[in-house]
Length: 205
Image (cartoon, rainbow, N blue to C red):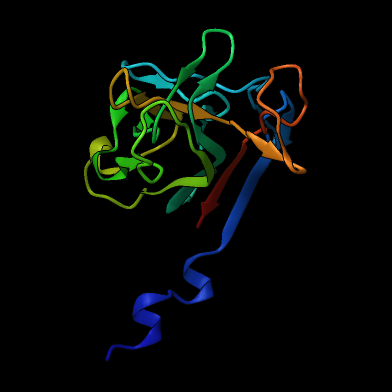
């Protein structure tokens, strides 16, 4: 068995240079003479069969000088679709996600979310809080955005999460929060029918 230091680097090699973290409520975070604006998520989001940006997930970011790694993390509530206005339901909500950096898919960040199949496509499923994350490597000898590796990240790059539904039967709803306090709360007017996501970026030296 190898040494723990082979798995967990010593503190001197992974110093935290800065942390950006907040709920997606439109706040601006001022840090080290830079300003980072988070989106303001005000409702659940309904997926389609084309890729779209998950609301609340984008951030335009330049890491501090001498950064070696950048952790991007996005936490959101997820559920399959139920939209009362047209009575559409999403069955198990099979949907596909990936992290995008400046328009390039980070290939190994691709993931699929689904509830358990109920045997009835007219049903929908309340999901869980899901975390999307990637650690970008800034020590690479050449840039390879699809692998999340860069040799010189010295200007703004936009990171976000993209998603789509599997097809028109399996539909998803980021930020959805259907059940609470013994009842269903799917109406858009209910404060608890959706939940704001949280975005975190950490730069390590």
